[in-house]
Length: 162
Image (cartoon, rainbow, N blue to C red; front, side, top):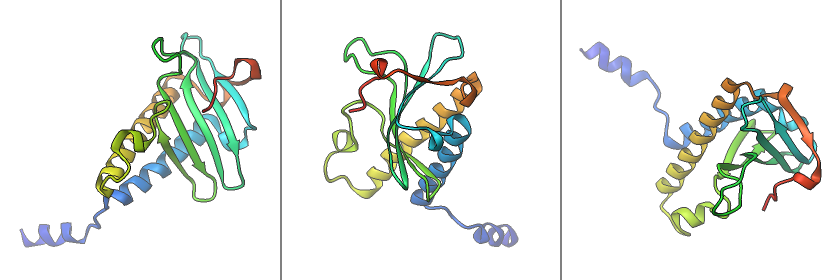
């Protein structure tokens, strides 16, 4: 029994923050395998596999170290007129991390958890958003979306990014 305890004591424990950073790294790998957004120019792209649920990828802004994206289906919520589900994503080129910054139009973290939440609540919220992003990216890949199905669309059909 003491051998089992000493063995588990030697396994390093991952903090919630460490777990979140690992999730960001996994999402970066998934997103790059799926759509390779670092090589895309600013604009809107559509991935269609013929199932009626086209995926829209808006490259909102590209900077030296980051790429701002919006990932959504090419359909609108009948109540708000906005794309839903929708994830705003920041890709960190240098750190190889991808973070979902918010997952609904007009609902940033301050709208969901308040201006002064405890740190554990902020990390929990970010873990939920980025777990959602990771599962969504995995689902899209399983459905057949990817670089081969991605095409640029004209600016007239672009969903507003803000």
